Amino acid sequence: MEISMPPEHPLAKAILDASSPTGVWLVLKVADGNGNLHSTFRAQVEKWKRTDSEFHVEFETWDRYMESQAQLRGI
Image 1 (cartoon, rainbow, N blue to C red):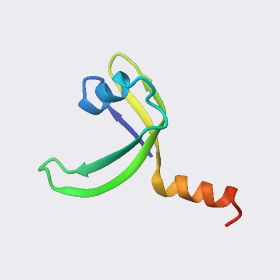
Image 2 (cartoon, helix red, strand yellow):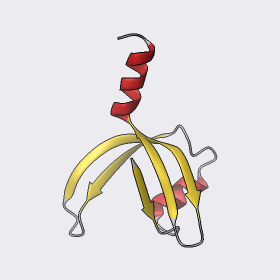
Image 3 (spheres, rainbow, N blue to C red):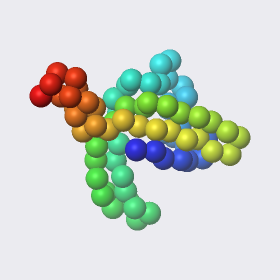
């Protein structure tokens, strides 16, 4: 899952301020512009890139992580 946001967004700041931003599991909540919660999921930062105007982050979701672990174990 990939998202982009302004570099001043609180999530972007938290990822940038982390001593090791990749591999840390986060609980993300997705809401619409009115604050209505649409979904909650676990994800970890895989890659991120910052420009002057945008912060781009790629997450590995918990479901994708568990699928890859099952495949590694031959399940």
